[in-house]
Length: 631
Image 1 (cartoon, rainbow, N blue to C red):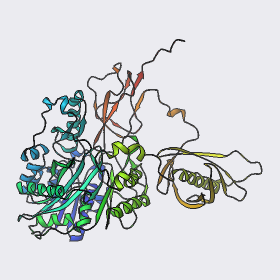
Image 2 (image 1 turned 135 degrees about the vertical axis):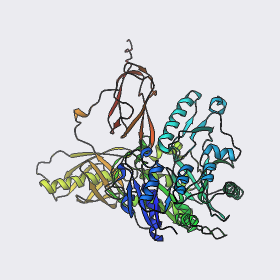
Image 3 (image 1 turned 45 degrees about the vertical axis):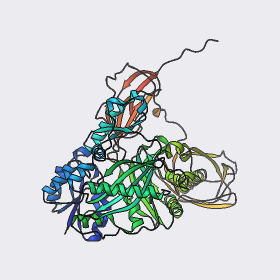
């Protein structure tokens, strides 16, 4: 019997496993890096062991250090979570050789399936030879052989870009997974990403726990997932389940695993088998009424699964809440998560709590919110409303995008589910959410009420000029003009049609078109104002001249580390618009910084290994001056 378990991972993953361990009476051990010393998974564990350093390659990817930590803490089992070392056969063997119980498939099964190249070979699918890729093969996908989560992936549409994308993907894969192997395969445009959840015991029983649709993705990372996958023809669904079961039996699989497919034109294309629990496993748990982590532990202890797979019920949808700005190229965000509160009736899987800081070292996912309902329509409606009611005070998140995605006709009706959803719809999905303008009015009046409370003042016999406040938010800036009234209230002059019912520093009531709405307002010292579900930023009345930068300045779009500078790049070089100049790594993803226009590189402040904050000056490109047209 397992009595003390170490989770060889961090954040939401570790917290999820710990939750089941508490239910089972199993003691827990966390590992943590220097960047994670105060993290929620450390606080929730019964014991924790430090892995000195901050980079994943120095900490969470060091299997030898994790095994030492397990032994030092008196653990008798290791759960790899669902990232980092979870698909590393050598790590599994190290755990087993140390006399610890490995919560996962046999190392031989991991070797057969964890490498995407070897898995394809096992199923008779040959990847493309990078040296022989021709124009007729395009587009192609460069993909990391190990790991997942969209890291180490690049779409190549121009043959001239292939070599550079192979190098970039390899570097990102090596950083994220400790394995820089990449391969090339045909890229299927706008297919559906469908997967099958498996659970197998050591006695030959294989459960195929239905399908999931994970088609809504950005940067090849999943955003919204659901079970079961809607609208699949019965014959195709049966084929997916059969292929997944055959793949598991072919390698003697034991434990939880997922077989992934790309479905296009009524055909299923095998992608990979993930020899671990997937991030999106909660939707399967909700539909089948099981705890997959508890079943993983039971299988590792030698238990037999019942011969019949549990029956599914209803529909479940999960949304991944990220600290990122979809309107700015999905740029990851950092900072203090001042308040995080999710309404009742929603399953929450998270590695953060109110007051925690979101840093630069790891994936920007804050949490997963999952709901279950008797029907898909009910689940869509329930999750969209829950996200609206969730209070998130801190960095910019993708919450508004998630709500808009769930309510978009293509998704809400399941009329067009495919991986091209955001390519088609992102501009429309990142416009100002409904209610942004009255939220800005509420923010302005709450600030005025707070100033009145501190300094007094109000209506005067000589009517003064309108007060003006401007707030930035999703979809642009909102200007508000108002003036105090004789009765101690306020009159809004812009936007038109707004009547002030009541105004206080933390709550404002406004009437528009005969309807009164109430807004809870929380303002912070950095100028961020949260009004209900809206995140606004107070704009300064006057621009600080010290904040001006030279034309052509390239500023860091996010905090991170400079990992590469273009070969041979030096001050004085001529550069062309769109030319890659350097690469930043932030939250386990590489971000390319390119020349904004053609011109001359007049300054270069970036060097590999340099840590930069958002807004740091990286380089300056002086644009070519065009002679004025002769009249």
